[in-house]
Amino acid sequence: MGEWSKRKAQRLRNRMAATLANQGALTDPYWRAAFEQVPRHMFLPRFFRPHADGGWTAVADSDHEWLDLVYSDWVWVTQLDCDDRRWELARRQGRISGTATSSSSMPTIMAVMLDALGIRGGEKVLEIGTGTGYNAALLCHRLGPRNVSTVDVDPIVLRRAAANLERAGYRPVLATADGESGYPPTAPYDRVLATCAVSRIPLPWLAQTVVGGQIVTTLHRPIGAGLVRITAGRNGTAEGTVLPADGRFMPLRAHRGPEVTELLRPVADRSAPSATTTLGMNVVTSPASAFEFFAGLALPGVRHAAGTADGDVRQSWLLHPDGSWVRHTSERGHHRVEQGGPRRLWDETELAYERWRELGEPRREQFRVTVSKDGQWLWLDEPFGGHHWELESA
Image (cartoon, rainbow, N blue to C red; front, top):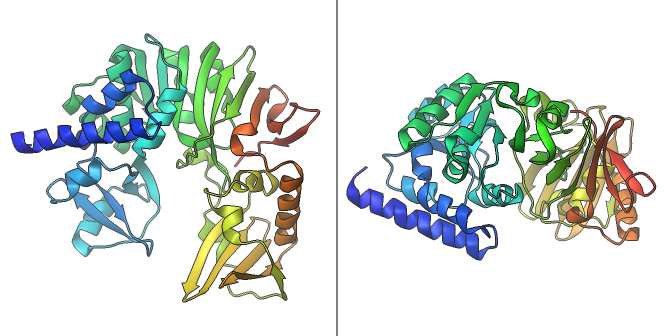
């Protein structure tokens, strides 16, 4: 990279950090300094750019827009279908389809999660999900490499991250490992940061965290995902809260569950008697909707498929592995639904919406998390005497 490009990269880093600070995502001056000084472009020499039709094109560091894209507040996918050859294919063909399996997270969410760790200096941190290595570099900048361990289940992803970190001058402990098991060789940890989503808090994380230590991760729920921060207690217990900022991460590979295309394929051509509804699908499934988090609690395991749009007519689906399905059609503010299978999912959805209204329309940050030897729950009011929902495995 020439001197002009280096100066441009520094200007873009400064601008990105200032934007994150102005948005309230960077409140700690030490983390702001890390974002200003750690070169994100060294961790993103190539990535995929998404398109509205669901396809992907390949971006390289030789492209004129590359540097500006790197320092935008956007998540950049670095691997499709667990296969690095997909990038070369996209480069040759111009556009391909695929499922994202590794990425560099949106800087806003990275800043929120790093701030949520409550770092004061000197803490020992385990990162689950190395990805490109950029987040590990930010941790190293703040805490020093001897205090940072980072693991990834994919050895190819980890080798690429190791090369990125070496090039940028950071040398944390790196290991290929199943993140669900934590990383015992350098335990115990004061903080655990998981840049992947989990259906339930893995108990090894608690076992490897000191009492009073913090774990920040994302709950993997097909509808209503959420960032959570929990404090480790004794004997595998923990208490915590859902954070107000919305965060979505790819799930830990063992926690993925079925692909939505697998659920849609057998019911896509089915029909059933239709009925009108006043509830739009966006109220149920949009991350911008205050109801979405509660909808995920009431509809565990239910997946959303975006469906099709034709002029003013938009169609989308709710699907469950038990074969239950909903086809929701919207046209100029009017909604109709068909539903089939062993359960009437839309009836359950409308009942959940009524219950949410009766509870005072609680927002995600009003929910708390309890982990005990008997299970894991999200709850309102009281852990067991009030309203609570058990976290289920993928």
